[in-house]
Amino acid sequence: MTTKIDTLVDRYLTDLEAELAGLPANRRREILDEVGEHIVAARAALDAESEAAIRNVLERLGDPADIAAEARDRFGVPAEPAKPTPWLEVIALVLLVIPFLGWVLGVVLVWLSRLWTTRDKLIGTLGGLSWLVAGLGTLSMSARGSTAVGSGPLGPTETSLLEVVVFVVPFLLPIAAAIYLGFRLRAHAGTVPGSQERSGHGGP
Amino acid sequence: MVSAKRESLITQMRRGTLEYCVLALLRDQPRYGFDLVRTLAQSDGLVTSEGTIYPLLSRLRRDGLVTTTWNESPSGPPRRYYELTGAGHQALELFTSEWDRFTSAVDRLLTQGGSP
Image (tube, rainbow over all chains, first blue to last red; front, side):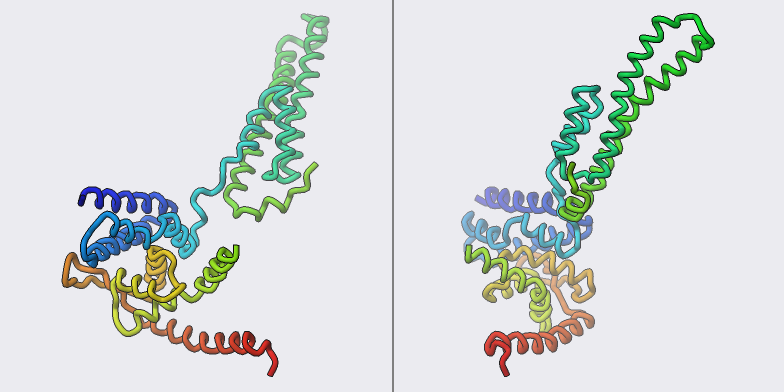
């Protein structure tokens, strides 16, 4: 009987500790200790200790989540499970760095998102447009390469350097744009809901 | 629906006043947590979950309005007693005088609708 009761109390305090996770350690300790002492005093005040009586004590204390919410409120700590994972945005970022079809879908999702501002969306889109440049560059390269091998003023070294620039930069830009959007998303996740959502939400 | 509205109204009113109710309970004597919380819970509508008083007590202590001391208990382990500090007494006095003005103003409007 006693062990069952101790289990109930332990589980309650464990839940409370988990719910208090966002608070400074000393405040968390203090509140946990005080609630623990409350339970000890409440048990001492019972005429006869029974499982039902202990359940009643814990019920009167209330849901650990409510206590933690009150604690965050009193100490000005923002809510702990900050926000649901922005899956739309995460998928958009992954698609953005996949050439061509992936990129096109990624851009569509970027513009559907409500978390980025119009400015962010433009930067993300323009950065990715260089896929197109890369595609054209590759085409013209191969076209030129087939006719100009070993002739003309451009030596092999210059050709490969140009190739590197034409090839690599356009492939890096969309990745840079995706990283930029990712950072903007993180910056957004740190703000209070609603404060930024609406500020730049112009849409396409 | 009505009870949800009622609940949110009470929450609003409790927000700024509960801490002074706690201070008032400690004005004449120190109390230990369980005693304080149970006494408060006997007042209708002031406390829904007893546990939510502890974050408030923690905050009052951080603000220097209450201190805690350990005292022997007649049964069981020593208990943490809450006690008003000088700043706590001052805060309570200020609230009490403002509360009088505030409630009379609101009462007047509620009963007479603002007519003289």
